[in-house]
Image 1 (tube, helix red, strand yellow):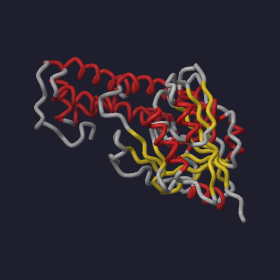
Image 2 (cartoon, helix red, strand yellow):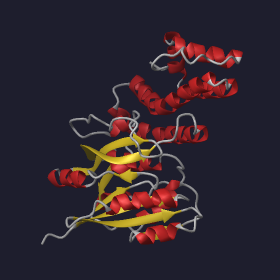
Image 3 (cartoon, rainbow, N blue to C red):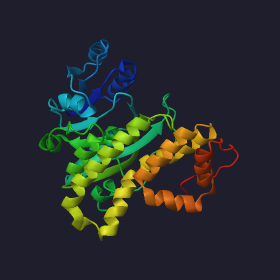
Length: 323
């Protein structure tokens, strides 16, 4: 009888025992005669129920007082011993198609260091909000420049060879945001990574316009990580303009968040909130905001409402402000 493949699953958690329970259940649901999981949970929260939740699913638990997701994940990563290493956030769930396709791809292509699956963004009730992504992948499996051009592979769809994961070590605990992106970039800068077009993880997203502080913080760390990697690999871009385009592409998710937030706040009569959002959109990508103001009647209406403090009529809208 063939021995099951062993996958170490890294789960960082903080004060979310209910969603953690769902996450761990989704991991165990994928086990079978061919596949077993070493669940490793790092906790930097204070909720007393968390150790019991981990124990109920046969996980290994450890705790730290150090703030930040990388500190919690690193507790678990110090113990990873599986042939493969995978990840899951404590508020997300794996989908039934996860893990096995990535392993099959890695078996078929020994030159690959890791494999990424598709992500499904959902609401707080795990109802999908859009189609799985990404849908395309470079033919040569060199995803590094695309990652430095705004592709953030959600860590829950990532499967890495265990020897590679242990070679690259822990995540940078100074990066409160995007430490997983930084860790993935370390790997993709030196190795090929494959892709399976299979929905792998359901990721809970936050309602639009409700996470200003988080978006500002993450944008700062995204900038820091981009500037960390870009100078080392300038030769992989065609010219300096391409580097700038890649940088602003990394800022696009944050820019889009604040433009959408500005519209919603203008429509609700929150002129101060709309001005705050517009300022941060400008700070993130001034050229794009100016261009959008020239082409979007709706966005000009948002600016006008933010300045005059008059609510923007809900009927005065385009499908996309940043189109």
